[in-house]
Length: 113
Length: 113
Image (cartoon, rainbow over all chains, first blue to last red):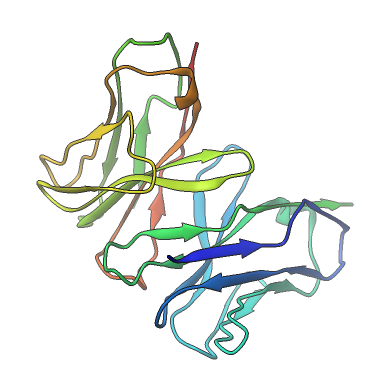
């Protein structure tokens, strides 16, 4: 079945550092790919998405490119801020048509001033 | 304001005492879903609904029930809660279609003792 794998462990970095969170997926066909962000005490909200191969999603300085050849959707930001501290989830949509999102386990990102 | 609301936000209960967590959306979305979030496991889908009176099991449906009598509401029912259902629960809604963003509620933290 469909699945998403995120890199293990929390990510701690200093303000203005470069952030990368790896995400790879397994799916049949051409799923849509998403990054959701969860700020402390809140629900998830969409950060960005891409719906076909080679599409680049971007929002709030974050970017991710849908790479079919490597089945990846890595999240990047060039200069993080303390306010980017959150949990980031990679997800893909289910092609069976039930809208199901398959999530990775999430990465806690902590940005230190 | 477009939103998904859940109630209660926090609930502590005892084993076997039936409870209902309500979920409501004001965006006229056809699709609604329940997820549970557990440390190290990410989010897993419990049940989903593609429209009124249409519901189906997700990945972890055991011990839960749902109903969809109205388009805006999708309550989650625990007939006989057990400690392994202690978790953070999220309701989500979206338009039908794999590429659409899902909107999440703020979450309900349930503790079963």
